[in-house]
Image 1 (cartoon, rainbow, N blue to C red):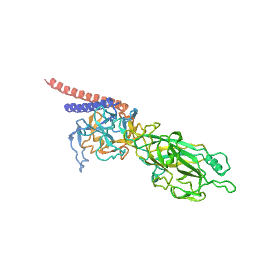
Image 2 (image 1 turned 180 degrees about the vertical axis):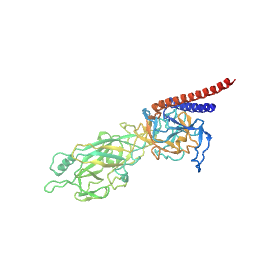
Image 3 (image 1 turned 180 degrees about the horizontal axis):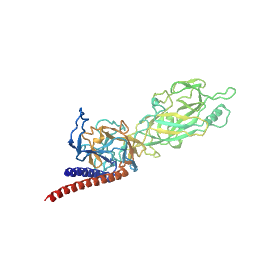
Image 4 (image 1 turned 90 degrees about the vertical axis):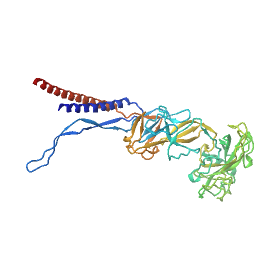
Length: 520
C-alpha cells in the first residue's frame, strides 16, 4: 500500500536530515582547535517478504525470495581522528599533538573524571597551574624533583610552574662534574683553546741562551662562585716553561723524555706551560703564594700542562719533571679525583670579601664553604698561532629565579632561570586508547572514555604509539570544507528525492480516494 511508501520516505527524510545536521556541525567547527570531524554511514531497514525462497526440485529451478525494503536508518556516526594541520602561535604554553594521543585534563582538586582532548590552548594561572582557561581544567603530568629528575610513572597529577621559582646557588666545585669522557668526569672547570707554540719556542731559545727575548704569557679571566652563589674574579696565567733547556753543543728541550697521559700511555712532550692563578679580591688558595690583593697579587702556581708534537694535550703535573726522564708520577689518571699533586686542582682556603667582586661575599650571616676545584685542560691545545685559551664551562652559578619555560617534543617543561641555568620542571602526560573511535564526546573539545573505547594507556610523548608535542602551535580542525560542501549537496538532493517519494505516495492515496468517491 502507498502508506508504506510514506513511512519509507519519512525514514529517508529523518536519516538525511541527521546527515545534514552532522555536516552543519562539521562546517561550524571548521576553525575549532583540535576538532575532529564526523562521518555518517547508513543502513537499510527490515524487509517485508512478498515471497519466500525455495530450492530446486525435479520440476522447478527454484524461486528467489521477494522482499520489499521499508526505508533507511543512520548506521554509524564515526569520529575521524586524522591529523589536523598545525598553526604556529608563538605562545610557549600552546601545545599541539603531532601524532596519536590526547592531553589529560581534570579539575584542580583531582576529583573529577578525566577529560581527554586534542585542544592544547593552555595557559598558566596566577598560581602557576598549567590549565585550560576555557574550562578551568588542569593539565595532567609529572613534576620533577629539586634535581630536575622526572619519574613518569603512576597516576599523573596537576602541573604547577610558578614564575619566580627560585634556583638555589651552587658553588664551583659542588655542581655536576664534567670531563673529557664519562669515565673521567671529575672536574669542575673546563678550559679550552690554543696556547701559542711559537711563544714556547721563543722561551726555549731564551733558556738555552740562543735568544734574547722571553715567550709571552697569556691570561684568562673567569668567574668562580662560592657556595653562597657569590662571584669571585679569578685570573689564570699560562706561561711557556722551558726550564732545563740548554744550548749548543748539545741542545736539549728541558722536557721529560715521556709523560704518561690519563690512560697511562707514555707520550713524548713537545711543549710545557706553567699554570698559575690569582684573585683580586683577597681569596686565598693553596699554595699560599697566591695571596695578595689587586693587581699586585702574586700568582699561585697550580702545576704544568704538557702537549705533544701535534699540539695535543697530554696531562698535567705539579712538578716540572726531570729533563730526559719519564714523568709517570704526579700525573692525572682517568677517573681519579683531581689533586694538588697532579697539578689540576685549585684549592680555595678562604674566599675574599673585597667590593670588586661581581657580588659582595660573603652574603648574609653565612660563610661560604671552601674546598678544591678541579681544572680540566683536555680541550686545550698548543699549536703555532695566536692565543685563544679560555674557560669553556664551570659548574657553579649564583641564585636565580625562573624567567621563562619551554616545552620539548617529549613534553618536558624546562625552566630558564635568570642565572643562566636550565632545569626540567615537569613533563606533560598523554593518553591513548585501543579504540579511540569509541570515545564519547562531551563538548568543549573533550572526550570521555566509554565501554567501547577501553581503558586509557597513559604515557609521555614520543614513546610507544604516542605522538610528539609541538610547543608554540595549535592543531587545527581536520574538517575539509570541500568535502563537507560536496556531502551537503548530496544530502540535500537525497532529502529532496525522499520528499518526492512522499508526494508520489500521497498522490496514489488521493487516487484511491477518488475511486471511492466515483463509486458513490
